[in-house]
Image (cartoon, rainbow, N blue to C red; front, side, top):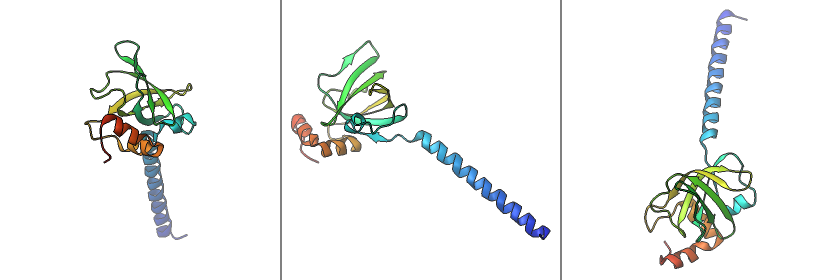
Length: 154
């Protein structure tokens, strides 16, 4: 093989290996930071992965909020077709209350509960996270929620 061609081949292979390494590192980093959304129904059916960071959302079930101490809270989230227990250690958002839509970020435990590291509540009376709205629309609970809170359909 001609020395010039051999040098070009080595350069092309080095560039190709660099691109493959860069893409691989990028994909691994993205995979670790992806937080897929699951409804309570999907979690109850076993579709959500355990011990992997996910987002779960729905309406906080009325009468389910239990404070274990100052910072530990246990509550249930429902979409009308399934209920999931969420455990959270920290200060809940000011807008968190029973019957309202929330999204919790955390890991699904072996017992089926979600150990949340973050709880997000809607920021005003008209807004609900899109994933929660979609899940409630599919379960038929959105109209019930709007009727109970005095809101019309968007």
